[in-house]
Amino acid sequence: MVMDFSTQVVQWQKTHGRNELPWQNTRDPYRVWLSEIMLQQTQVATVLDYFPRFVERFPDVGSLAAAPLDDVLGLWSGLGYYSRARNLHLCAIGVVSLHGGVFPKTAQLLQTLPGIGRSTAGAIASLCFGERVAILDGNVKRVLTRVLGFDSDLAIAANERRLWDEASHLLPVRNLHEVMPRYTQGMMDLGATVCAAKKPACGACPVAKSCVARGLGDPERYPVKTRKLKRSSQSIWLLWAQARDASVWLSKRPTPGVWAGLHCFPLFESRETLEAAVPARYRPMMHEMPIFKHVLTHKDLFLHPVQVQLPTSAMRLPAGAWIVADEWPRLGLPAPVRKLLVHG
Image (cartoon, rainbow, N blue to C red; front, side):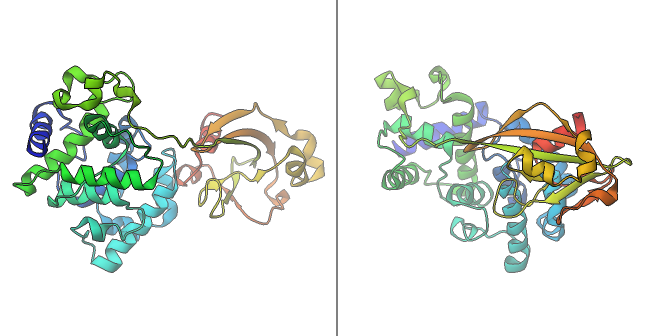
C-alpha cells in the first residue's frame, strides 16, 4: 500500500490540489514556517489577508528578529492565539542568533526552536528540504485514521505515537527532494478540501478505494478522540478611559494570562472594582455599554465595557499610558478591544 498510497496522493495533488496560495511554490523556509504558524487554528481565508501584509513588513527572518515585539503583535492583532506571535518572534531571534539566520534543514533541529512542534517541523523539512518525515496536523490525522481504519483513541498518547509510526510508514521512498513537498502538500490538501470532518467528498478522493472508513460506510466516526475540552466562562469589566484629545488609556497585559503581552483597556473582576479606579467626581459620567461575548479556546469571556472621559491628569492607575489616536492602531490589541476602538 505504501507506494500506491503516496503515488496516488502526489499525482492527485499535481492536478487537483491547492497550488496558488501565496506560501506555495516556494522552498523558502521563512515563508513556509510563517504560513504554518498562521494556519494553526486559523482558516486559510483569514491567513490570506494577514500573510501578504506580514511578509511586506518583515520580508525575512532577520527583519522579524530585529523588530520590537510590539510591532509583531500589532501586525498579528486579530489573528488570535497570541502565543503564536510571541513564539514566532522568539523563533526568529533563535534562527538568527543560533543558526546565523538560516533555518535548520532537519525536522529534529527545527523542533529545538520556540513554537515549532513535531508536525510543523515536519512540514518545513519536507516542503523545503525534501526530508522524508511525516506531518500530523488535524487534517492529516483525519485522512490517515479514515484510510487506515485507525480507531484507537487519540486522546491516549501511546495511540497517537502509533499513528505517527503509521504516517511515517506511508511516506514516499524515492526521489524525495521532488516528491516529498508534493506529498506533504497533498496530505494537507486532502484534509482541507476533500476529507472534511462532516460529509467528506469521498467520490473525489484519490485513495477512496483503499479507504477502510469508506468501506465501512462511516467515515465520520474517525478520528476517535474521547477527551473533550472543558469550557469555562468569566465576566470581565473593561475601563475604556478616553481623554478629550481622543487618547485612550492602555496597559500591557502580564504574561501569563489572558491576552498576555497585548495592550489593553484595564481589566477588572467586577463593576465595583472598576468604579474604585475612577476618581469619584467622574463616576457619574461613566457609561456602561452592552455586554458581549468573546470566545477563546477554552473559555467564554463576557465583556462589560464601561466608557468614561477623563482629564489626562485624573488617571491614577499604576500601570499604563495615554496612547494617542494615531498610535494605538499599530499596537498589538485584543480583537474585542480593537473592535470597540474602531467601531465604538
